Structures are given as structure tokens and as C-alpha cells.
Image 1 (tube, rainbow, N blue to C red):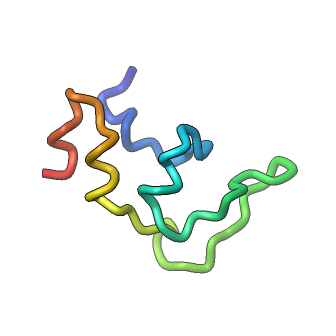
Image 2: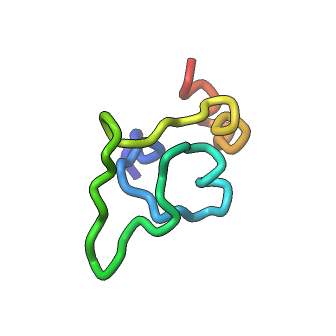
Length: 65
């Protein structure tokens, strides 16, 4: 497993808490084999670090430091 596995760009929205740690992500990411283009700057979503930290594995606790 690569060291940056935690930061891969594509996610399936699984586990359930994924939608709690990002804002601006549509509920359905892939539809009929296509991904909708989000009309917001950058990746189109905002990460909520305070919520994300609660779900990090022990080895990744310093990811946001």
C-alpha cells in the first residue's frame, strides 16, 4: 500500500462518515460511468479537518499537522 493511500483523490463515499468530513460533494459521485463536473474551485469540495481527524487511523493522526 503506498504511503499516500489516505490522500487518494477518488472515493466512493464509503464509509458512511465520508459525507460528514467534506462539504460540497454530491451524494451520487459516479452516474452511468461518469463523474459530474463540480462547478466550485479546485477539487470542488471543502474538507472539514475537525471531523476528519476523528476518523483517522492511529498511524495517520498527524496527517493535518
